Amino acid sequence: ETGVTQTPRHLVMGMTNKKSLKCEQHLGHNAMYWYKQSAKKPLELMFVYSLEERVENNSVPSRFSPECPNSSHLFLHLHTLQPEDSALYLCASSQLLQGSLGYTFGSGTRLTVV
Amino acid sequence: KQEVTQIPAALSVPEGENLVLNCSFTDSAIYNLQWFRQDPGKGLTSLLLIQSSQREQTSGRLNASLDKSSGRSTLYIAASQPGDSATYLCAANSGYSTLTFGKGTMLLVSP
Image (cartoon, rainbow over all chains, first blue to last red; front, side):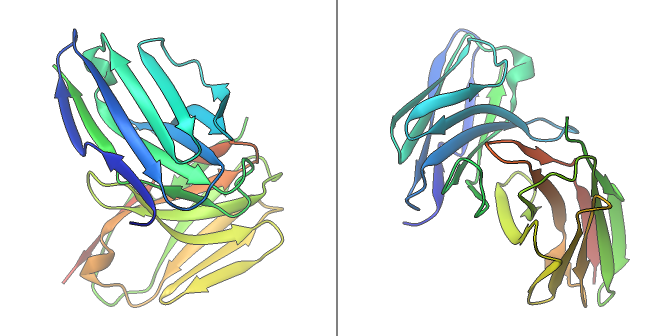
């Protein structure tokens, strides 16, 4: 399989649940990203990992916890979310941190918090 | 702080028309600019990537131009088809994870 793969595609969770989003890239890229896309708003960068080290946390609440065990995998652990966290969560990767060769995005996970 | 604006927010055209989507950015110090397509509820598909040193890129019926000095990029779609209906996003890359998106142009091409 090629490209950036995200699972699950859809997730419904209660505010007290704990769940995880998974992202896997098969492109040999060194940098991976989590973005949040809410209705009527531009994509918002959440986290950046370069060579498995977190290089940016864009003022994201602690109820979102990223993990990057290796350069091909990225997780977003979720706990005690709020209904306003419902959104499309997109994973992306790039060859280099500066994105000089562009970015590749996954299909996203549609998260609904009830 | 980079800001990206896309005009129009929505566009509806009959099949076969040529159309132009506009993107403007406030900080001209960019590495590149990337155009994406997004179908409803789906992820982003990269259409074209223009490096800061380039003026345009072409792929099939799509042509994207970049005028860095004026902070503008356009996406030209020739002979539009219903399958082109989607939201088109431009993103300015200022380097080192700083990718700034516009809100997108929602395109509807009717048969």
